Image (cartoon, rainbow, N blue to C red; front, side, top):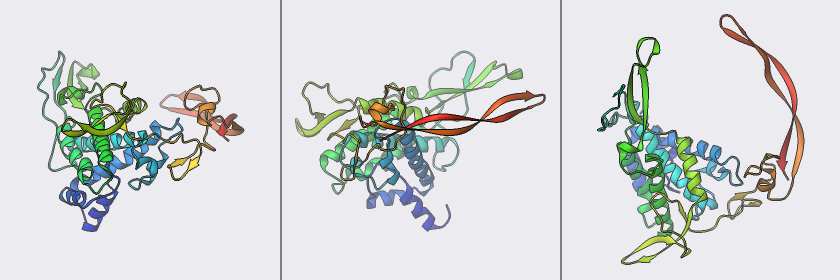
Length: 333
């Protein structure tokens, strides 16, 4: 791992779903220094994937850039906070599970061979993602700070813990299953003469984090507003509106409404949509009407250089010319 200072820096860079670091999380970090590279990878993936997933919406995940020093919109129990916590929790589990399979971590290795009988034409082999270890360590790292009374209200902690678990549930399987062996994709490699694929070696692997984020975005759009109140002997998260179905373990939940993100408002964590590029012909969230919040848009012309008139030469390269063309762009007023 190198110098202890480097290890501490990795601890500080690591992104859990926590808003701030607490002593017990630092201790856990120091006890598991070899995992910190995976945590840092998960932090970077969370930021990149979140911004890519919401690039066409008013809230484009820009507030995650300062993580773990989140802005107000990610500290107050909003729908956006629900998504970020869920994605971060999934990313940590994802990164650790894949690090086990790639041999990066000394305390874990490939997942166990699946118990199900292989189908015709393939056999179990390879090195599957160790989801069991990823869930075990990932949940401990992401959830431990949220169990402290020093971090936010009881309702906010309950919300974040629920969304952490929902993110890991999504990472376990897009069908929401709870049996680990059923939650992973079957991935295969072909063997045989001249690539005939007469025999396939298969293993269980996690879906791409971008796929998980896309599914979580659907849950974000359908998130349930909740309140934290006594149900029987203990407090639970229940829907704010009485006509809404009960909360399930795969739902994302939030406590307060979000700003509309149309105009800058530092107190609410909104940076506004002014100067954001928009799509003039789209009727979706990236369309100029919705993204610009009815303010209108400005048009400008840009010259782009592209490869064109490409020809294949035997053997074996392609030669292209460079063509210039003008394209019209649109940005929100």
